[in-house]
Image (cartoon, rainbow, N blue to C red; front, side, top):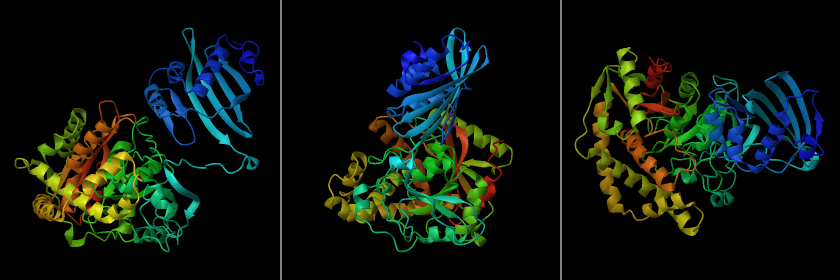
Amino acid sequence: MSAPEKNEECQLIAPVGTPPGLLEAFWRYDSALLANDRDTLDELFMPGPHTLRGDGQALLVGHEAIAGFRSARARIPTRRVAQLHVQVIADDAVLVMARTEDGEATGLQTQLWRLTGDRWTVAAAHVSLPAVPKSAGPAAPFDTTVWRAIGDPLVSADTQGPLDGIGVAVKDLFAVAGQPIGAGVPAWLAEQRPQAESAPAVSALLAAGAHVVGIARTDEFAYSLAGTNAHYGTPPNPAAPGRVSGGSSSGPASAVALGQAAVGLGTDTAGSIRVPASYQGLVGLRTTHGAISTAGVLPLARSFDTVGWLTRDVRTSATVARTLLPDDGDRAVPVARTVRLPEVEALARADVREAFTTTVENLTAAGKLPPAETVDLPHDVLERWFTAFRTVQAWEAWQAHGGWITAHPGALGADVATRFAQASEITDEQAAAARELTAEARKQLGEWLSGSILAIPSASGPAPARNSSGDQIEAERAATLRMTCLAGLASAPALSLPLLRSAEGRPAGLCLLGAPGTDHGLFTLAAALETPA
């Protein structure tokens, strides 16, 4: 089919001798884009690990990554190719640039086509999002699955300092002056007024020279680990396209992974920083409980809520720590051993467990981690600790939000609503008994962590697929929570580092837990670990 037959209004600028079959392949590709025909798009992209696809947010490398991105792709708005430029580079290589129109909006698509055998396929593609003229009215300037509000910047730095030029994505649980707190729930947001002043953590970052890029999405009331918000959608995971982002600090994590912010300020109650860090190949710190004020932060479970952050590298994260955290001082006991808990490691998927074991053994052999010592948990103790943690967390979550939820039936997505419904059934007596057991766990973990670090996988596996069933997501969550609850029980700092890979090459984190108050010491140790032995 010739170009004019495919689109009579398209202006074709192509040299005489354009290779046969090239234009037919292009128009087939364009039709597949409009129809979101994923099978045809997969067929028309060159197979192999070197195929490229880029846009204003991410660069995907390899046919598998590009295909994974399409698994979450929606049908694009109707538009037409207005102008098509063809430049023949070689007999088997052609550059194609297409200007598209949708009303008054224009966009640009560029593809490098290669001839393999008798088939033309796309070796590299770049898409520029449509530019909308003023006459077309306001357009959404940002990804609303990642951001609730964004500015240029949204809040400027107070002064110059050690974080000068650092942009921060703030989780939508923190007070930011002039902005309401949305908590990932539209009905909640609709009732909120702008905050008069920022939370202390936000103010401290601004005073150190950082600026707020925007307010980033969270799972509903931060009561999830997947990052799949029923109202706003799932933020992208550029490190594992087609996979969930991880929550509840989902928006800040995606903003950092996409390069739209250098720091994602979040909270971690039961893994809400460490899990998205693991899924997206980021550095993520849960701080010592109480080390940073949670004033101005919407609570989930006060006994375990902590402030933390995500970055793309250890150095940036350590700089933030020097701004927000007190000096370790006398609490920084020299680390003499690396504790390993086989019962916890067994919760990880086999390939992640193998990668974890190999990495820890290599790092200890190289002297980058202290010698390892295995500690066997008494029978059923992990399950009893986890049950106690989950009971206290759920009871406190209901105390914080139960009244509002009762008054707003249907305001939450099914998974989070079920979680809160179960929380509502926990009695004061059950919560008190669980608190006694969490105190015992804190004492035991504190003994193990004194002069030691605990090394565990950050999550039970790599990021699940976005189209995973609810049961699959819940199974991943249950296994991961049994790992992540240990830091909450110990009131300990926990640092997730992007040092592991799954069998398919997806990111997975190695998590280091230190004694309470040794947050800075974890960064000193981590500085030597960014490149595995």
